[in-house]
Length: 209
Image 1: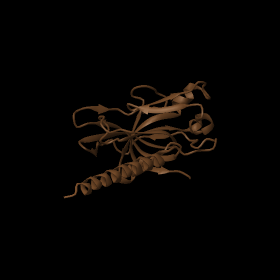
Image 2: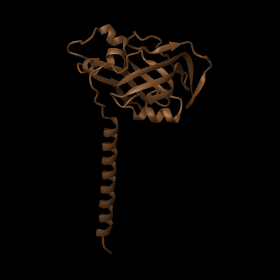
Image 3: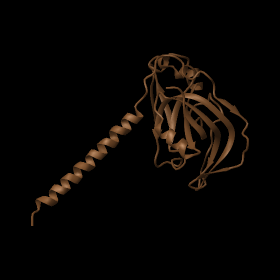
Image 4: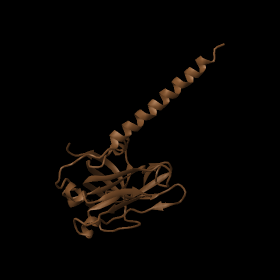
């Protein structure tokens, strides 16, 4: 009995696996690479927050409930995107978007910043501030997105830095299956812990090309 056939089949299977992994990695890199934008404000308008149509709890799946606090709509530029897998919000809010509007959607301004996300926070650094700190803090934010539909979930997972998105839904508080909770921010000018918006997104649509 020849032993070479089995080892050859193993090598072939291993090569196919490595090739598949490489293709997935390349696809994810291409799909998530930042879009290049010319200078200019891409999202000039302030987010709009109004009273919610209802404050009744909504079943978000996985034993979670969300409680609407305000209706919310905004057009924003994606500054960064981070996927989460194992933290308490991950079952219903798998992706955070760091976003900017006003001058924080202008490539000429954003060129001064290093932007990152981790542990459900958004971080920025600039050696010299191109605009006042207060404007940076009131015109950018980190959003925990709870997709309200499969279509929104797909759009969220495809979102890329540099993309302009129109988001509509509700600012919500979250009650988890283990008794834990998370509260959404209801202000645009707060910072630090508790300053992130939690958005039950009914729509998440790309704007322009």
